[in-house]
Amino acid sequence: MSKWFYNTFLPSIFDRCKDRGKEMWLSQKQTAICIDNMELRQVRFDPDGYGVRCTHNNYVCDWNGRRVVLSYSKKNGCGYISFGMNKAEEEAHRARIEAEKAQAEAERIARVKQDPERLAKRIEFYTMKINALRKQWEGEKEEPGYDETDAEWYAEEIARFEAKLAAYAS
Image (cartoon, rainbow, N blue to C red):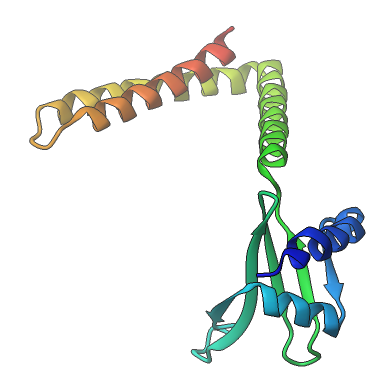
């Protein structure tokens, strides 16, 4: 593995493709450089579902906390390179997704609260779900093989449904 590849080549490719969603097509020469410096991973798949298996060459490496993947085309000798997210970008992305989910859930609850009939159905559903989980939990406590993992799962599920019930009931 060449220092030039990691210190010069990959940074220059990354700078050129970061405005394009961190992926781009490479020339044949650039692809050849990547093939020489990256690890081969062959992927076998069935594109049509008829049992005809195809093999596709992917080349991978880790660079600056990113997973770099080169998909190589045997037809034209060019490759498509993509750079994964680093840890900081993953955390920011996860936080953004969680915030969007929380906002969507809050909007959904607000819409349900506007309709008294739907609100009553939601409250009844969550109450029934909580009671059913508690009853099932009590029954499983007496069975052999019951352990702390089961107790944790039931406690988490009940807490999750109680939080939803509280959101609709408030």
